[in-house]
Image (cartoon, rainbow, N blue to C red; front, side, top):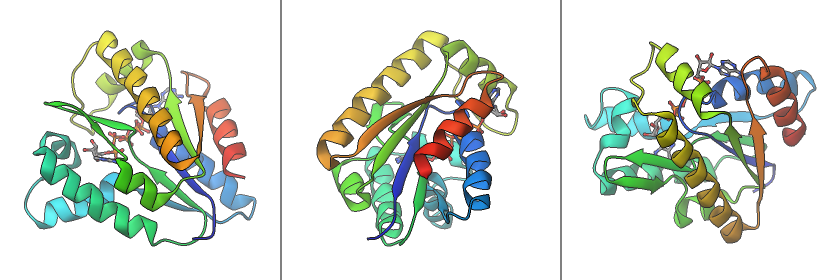
Amino acid sequence: MAGKKVIITGVPGVGKTTVINTSMEKIVAEGIPYQNINFGSFMFEVALAEGLAQDRDQMRKLDRTVQKRLQKLAAEKIAAIDGNVIVDTHASVKTPNGYLAGLPEWVVSAIMPDVIVLVETDNDQILVRRLSDESRVRDVEGAKSIAEHQEMNRAFAASYAMLTGCTVKIIVNADFLLDKAVEELTATLR
Ligand code: AP5
């Protein structure tokens, strides 16, 4: 499939969607076409239609086999998209039974990314962003737990690179430095 495939990940609340949306405006203004696909939205479409979840935050609590089926359906649709694509998703999802790979072999091999981006920042900043976001039902967890999730995401990303030969890019989205994160992501997309 022609085009650049960029998978963008980060723990909930790190601001990956904010960074993606602003970078999309810049890259499209430069005349480089990109489609921005939200993996969770593809999954949620099916989950809602089947009465499995009423909002996207309920999906990570679903049975593992159900989440895997939803992942597979989303991956099949995304893999069929031609051209430059951003996939907004998760390297790992924190479920009540442990970390679930966001991009298991059958997902990452279907998409075959050129690069996996990890959006990161200080654990305390993520904690504050989650507490300030009233539009979502964010998991309440401490900075230590957020740190563990960010570390796990690096481990998962390394395994995806081993499977596909993609590169792994870490972009820091620190408080007051959104522009810097946007500039780095835009450069990665070019
Ligand atoms: P998803 O749609 O990815 O939701 P999410 O994890 O909650 O991520 P968001 O995009 O809502 O948050 P964000 O971290 O991008 O932060 P935001 O930009 O809003 O996934 C939904 C669900 O789908 C998952 O829970 C999972 O169940 C499922 N799913 C998805 N992919 C899956 C997969 N591969 N396998 C299995 N399940 C999957 O920003 C947050 C806040 O921070 C905002 O208030 C913003 O203003 C602020 N902010 C951002 N940047 C800055 C900055 N630089 N300085 C200060 N504040 C900032």
